Image (cartoon, rainbow, N blue to C red; front, top):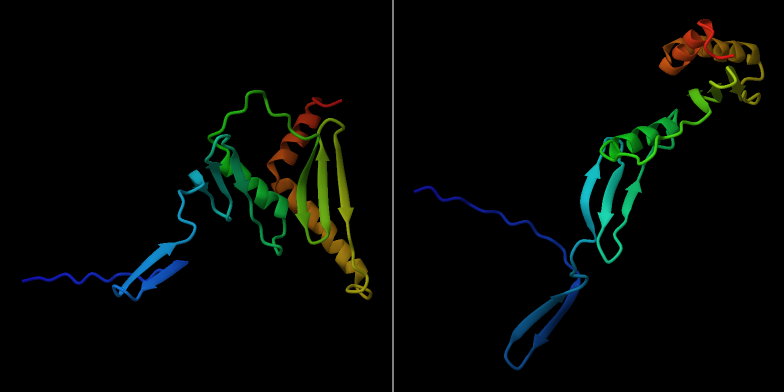
Length: 168
């Protein structure tokens, strides 16, 4: 005959144990035994999570997570937020920001303002690290801008719109 061996997993539970010496019995009452306060839990890649609280006035809660070492923390958080809210429909059209960041890498940021048809570039150069080759580092950042911008869809759409005379 086949016998199936069932292994049980040990779980630590906090509580109060009482021993009654009169009848040699032991009783255990666990602490914090309550129903879950989260329902409809959804998670996404990157560590983000959305859930609905239980109670008299339920709320929708979000947690978004990004690594400190990430080159673009804003993009990581935005991707998680978009993934967690793709099934939510806005009641009014969403107003997009006037300025859109299109590059964010190692002290270099590029912001695109479609209404004004302007590209703002900010660069931070640590002279303590690059005191001898600051020119090479600055040239590297300029080359990075030239490589990254054509790869950005929003930047290409805006440039094509300007070429056609759309923004004045």
